[in-house]
Length: 91
Image 1 (cartoon, rainbow, N blue to C red):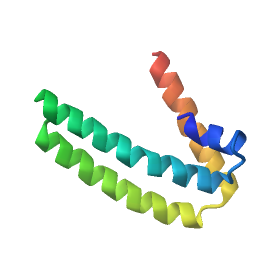
Image 2: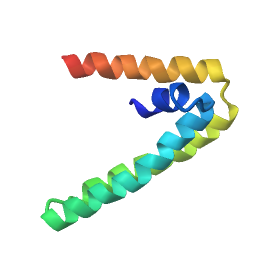
Image 3: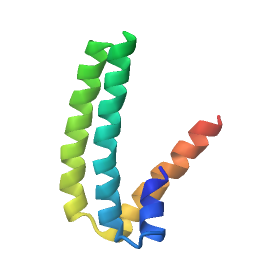
């Protein structure tokens, strides 16, 4: 949640590049998490397949939208989701 504003503000990346960079960071982190769950014996393969299918579909759809969505709409959507997530986190 923090990497996109940090990349945009501190590194002065354009917003679309900041979003793309954040997505690129998520894959290796997710892979490390899977490896840890496997070694701990707590990996649920059925849940992983379900999440993997949803994540893949979301990534493809998101990449499609990222190329076509105006910067202003992308900003409003992103920050709206972050505010919603923050409110849900406080409950």
